[in-house]
Length: 606
Image (tube, rainbow, N blue to C red; front, side, top):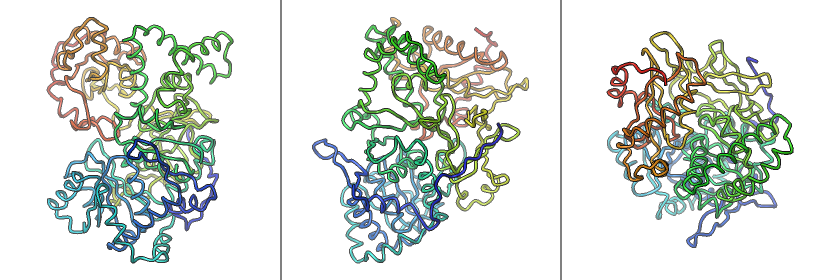
């Protein structure tokens, strides 16, 4: 199949905008809890739709009174927290456009987002964030920026107080001004290369995509009795879309800004579904495996994992034998139930995006009773173009198009997208917008294929395809994903463009390393730098590479590698906030290591 077009299941009034989702929930007799917040005693307290609407309205009036006009841009720089969503909707109620900023951004990055968008105001989470915003405004001469408020302290009270003179009728007139075609937010791509581009996402992108997603069997997961906890950055399109989708469905959403507190928060809040990037699921699996091995129960965990995968594959094929059912039931008591309880005990589904999860991991979680619905999209497509749903799922793929969306595979394998999800264009960059579209289809830059049922599989990133000196095309992700799945490894970057053979840079997982060292008779206190040179560690990585090499041809196989003595992180400048490796930056910063690898005597394939 080369193209699939799925008609919309829901047609939305063109005069609608995102604010209607809150108004609709507040008008319900059930008055659903849209959010849940931790109080001073550490207890979760619900925020009902009517209370949320009242506070959003008060803040929107304050923005209006402060001079924020319809269509004006307002920045938000904060970690994931309840106030992020509160301010986001307040900006929309005031008829303005929100501009998310990652809370880890440098002053120059903040200046670019606020300056390029022409923001008239901004919210910073803390005094630290306010200082960065003001520093950016001063250094870059952002004359348009008139107000900077804090989410902490008295900042929001100041905004609320400013709006007491604005009438309900004035607010209602402003709230209704935007329609589906108007811009709701400008999200700057975190960018693995070059200056971030501002993606103009409309009210229609959010509302039409949400309504059509909920009209599928996703509505059996995302509904008024469901609960989720948000820990991904709301500045990223994936979490942002789910945040809006949850309001559309009446889901109760909690927030946790620090992923280090995730497990305790999962256990106290007990969500029914979660969303995460693949690296989180890899960490959950690897942490469980490491804990089992450290406790001398590694063999049991491996058998349980193999059984879960076998059980899931058998279910997908439609035939589970009695012996497999009995074995699965046994491991459910011994292993799987403990894993589910670690995530709160109520989680039955998860949504994964932002990168490939991998078939094996997908089947593992499905087999333990946590169905992961993998989807695909970009900032430019308001997150999901496609997604697996409970009644339309094929593990190892990223699903079929959400109703209202379409996918086409170009002659060169590039994935093209069209539909309610696709952005209006790049802000103030008509040239880039023109390049991004072909005959009405958005060029994603990814390569993939559609099967006969319309399920999409991603095979790589078009611009990341490596062409060796011998002319062989190599897709790095095919190798990287397999190697990175092991607990010992944190990141992998396959290299070899215009080189005689394929190589790789590997980083070690700092959390998993001590346990691995201990189980292999090595000092657990060994540093990352020393571990990178340790023969036993090198041999283990070589074994992982050998296994990955079995899935590709000899010309595509990794012939040499180097373990980098420090991890790739966002702080080091080598990862985007959505955990993608900045390939160009890594190649630049580790040029000496790469050159040494290629100048050394050419290795033979192990």
